[in-house]
Image (cartoon, rainbow, N blue to C red; front, side, top):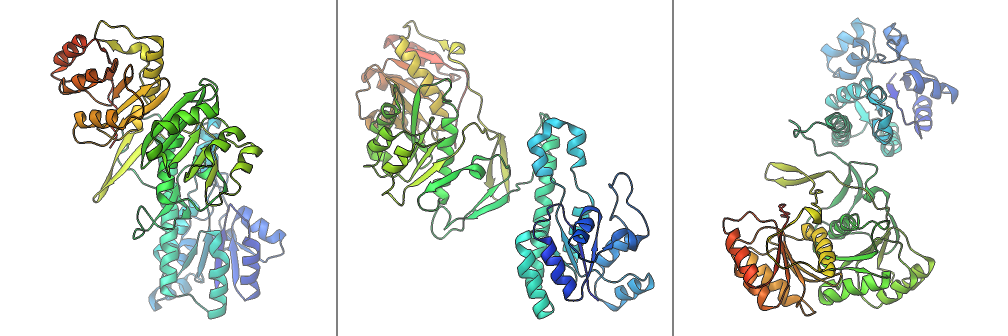
Amino acid sequence: MKRALISVFYKQGIESIARKLEENGWEILSTGGTAKYLQENNIGVLEISGITKFPEILDGRVKTLHPLVFGPILAKKTPRHLEQLREFSIPKIDLVIVNFYPFEEALQTKDKGMDFMVENIDIGGPSMVRAAAKNFQDTIVIVDKHDYRPVVENLLEKGDISLEERKALAQKAFSYTSFYDSLIAGYLHEGIETTPAYLNMAGRKTMDLRYGENPHQRGSLYIHDQNSPLNRFEKIQGKELSFNNILDLSMVYEVLNWFPADSHPDFSIIVKHQNPCGAGLGDSQKDAFKKAFSGDSKSAYGGIVGFNRPLDGETAEEMKKIFFEVIVAPGYTDEALQAFKKKKNLRIVKVPLGYMEKSDIKTVPGGFVFQDRDHQLKAYEDFELKTSRPLTESEINDVRLGWKLIKFVKSNAIIIVKDGMLIGVGAGQMSRVDSVDIAIRKSQFPVEGAVLISDAFFPFADSVEIAAKHNITVMVEPGGSVRDNEVIEKAEECNISLLFTGMRHFRH
């Protein structure tokens, strides 16, 4: 007689699989709540305590941690191992089906305190899964409910599954335990200032993408937090999201979070290839969009557009004649959706705003680098005016807008803002003065009287000279160059208001 050990917190679909095994002569071993659930569904169960002759203790903390459970899981089907099992009168366990206490869900209510969180850490389940996965050549392990039916049906029909299938299930099992442990480690690291000594990049695959950044690259989306906007978004219409769509959509989302509707007027942002190419604040949503689009209408073609309020019909009518890949907003009126009804390929994404990712991880050969997300933003009131020319109220508003945008532009980054709109972007240049040239040259509007913002200090006064030549009146930079005095003197000479922020915002 073959034996299956079943111990699951999430019980959906488990009774039909257990019944199928029982009907085909398998003996079912189980624990606690799972045993009770199967018995209530008229499935014969041998409880683990009946094998170990030892009851559950410590409020259920210890149920399965026993040699008479782990021996049959870890035993290889060799004469020596099977003889030892016979010596102790314990049959081999051939199949282990386990999932864990709901620590991931508990994270949503972690305000209940440390004791609550600790009691949601599973010990016995991961231990059995690791044991079965280690012994995958002789013990089948299933942790994913989507594998229940295909694996069991294949097992019962053919009498076994292939070694390759066993290995794939073991890989999934170890990945599952690693993901689970990473959630626990992440929770316990909260409040600790230093970076962790060991850091796991763990996530649950939520979708396979058609391909990666290019057609010859594989691509998938993984989520490590249930609250992620990419786990909660609703795609109302359009084609499947691509790898590049998800990257640009994510940037749009992060920019929108700096312009919450309860404290800002209507705001629209357009992103292309991981750089903002248009942004605007307006008296209406339509006005904000027109500002964002007219800032660089050529680059906006095929871009990702976002709004900080539900999209209305009037704005949608203005947009529908333009090709965009994705629209992102916290909601849509019926009129807006009707306006896009004929644009079948246009991806319309509804997503709640407010989620702030805390970590920034980039892979390097054989590893990855970690840093905190760039969420710090100095207030305008903490900036230092280095020249004698005072700013007008309009210029101050443009500084506030640009200061929130600059950290989303690839370094070396220069942006130009005027009248509540982004009118010029110089991104990703190896020379800062080249970024200044590009931002001015790309502007579709006169830059006279505009605000120019840099993500890092000006190493020379040449950028000030170029700005003055085009009658730009305000320049914003962190300061910190050995030639700061030369830059300040040139700005004073050119009657430019020069602000030092004291904070750099590189983005690579």
